[in-house]
Image: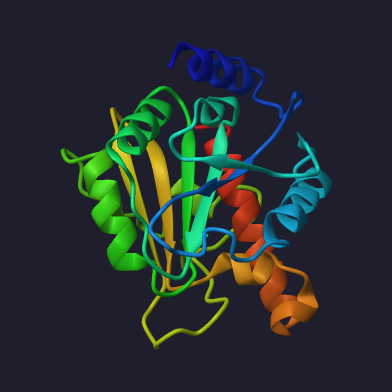
Length: 215
């Protein structure tokens, strides 16, 4: 916990993204496809480096939720379509990471919702996720989203929602629901979405990273 705290404090203290750091996709058990959208983070990193003047490492890492390596990454991304299962070790490790300064972005790739809510309740049994209002700063970083999360991929007609787990006044995890941002971050030919929709997805992703690194 001391390690991630030091990393994040030093990173945030610059308030400028001047340092080179890496972000990672979170690998979990349970059978869900944690590896979904393999090109998404690479494209988001490139977009952030171009438009936010970040110096994120161009290649994302893969880190197991129960590994000590998790503490090397101030920002981790979790996605998938199905079951998620955290062991007791995973729960303890992820909790220590998050309360020590780390940030988790969860992106529902359709079908993830009941499983991630169940597992996050293990990580923070004392915290219920709250829906963030459209006025929240996460929607008003470099790019403005006055109506909250953009709809990138239609699932079942439900509205998009952004949920947060807040610990001691800090958002430790943000959950983008019914939007599928990762589909919009992928190479454009993968899902054949419009350029405008893909741009909105990348802009919202950049907002999440900018918020995580400056809150």
